[in-house]
Image (tube, rainbow, N blue to C red):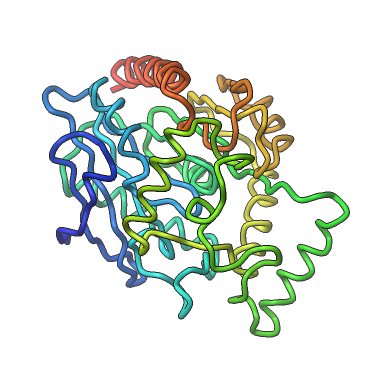
Length: 320
């Protein structure tokens, strides 16, 4: 059952009449799902899987571009972030018990799409941690005609000498009841709310940096700090498992910035080199969030994404 939820349309800057819904996952957690509609004839629906720390309003401008091309967008606040139910007493800690729990959230967004009667075919855009969740989902048969990944977390960038320590510390924390503690080098502060624009890891565009910053400062409940040791262990385990599985035969575009400094680019290159019909696009001088770069660059990426959707939709219609 869908219940109306708060939605900050002034901060999102998305299509008119956008709104959000509360939905309860199969394991009893309250999640928030946002619907960015199309005004007029629709060509399909985009499932938008945000990254760690993100929330549905962050993709309002992306949804506006998709709506202009005829696509509804359905985005989700994953468990433990945004306005979804937080997992720990410290609500700023990014935490999940096991990564498979995010697939329960995927089921919730599919249920919402059905409840709202959103049009087929569906497509996927997934960023960072959402790219990890999305890859797992399409491997398990997520009913989409095509998929787009941006800076996908198919591996976490950790210096090779430190990787064994990260495994040992995060694994050990679960055994001794400390998995709720922040991972080393992180804490309660939201990165966008506390970091300066100069030298940031997310975008080279000051306007988009201000857009993201305005959102989390205006609505502090959207803020999330660093990941827990438990999240780190689960993320390392999940990305290692996914690396051992073959890519699905699904039309795919993957965008990664040439200045990516958060996720493991070698894992992305390896995956896309063996994705049938997949294409890796390296965004020159782009940072982690290529959909949050400058307007001209975003328009170029949007055009490529829409082209992929159109081709996949045509193939979907032939099969149907």
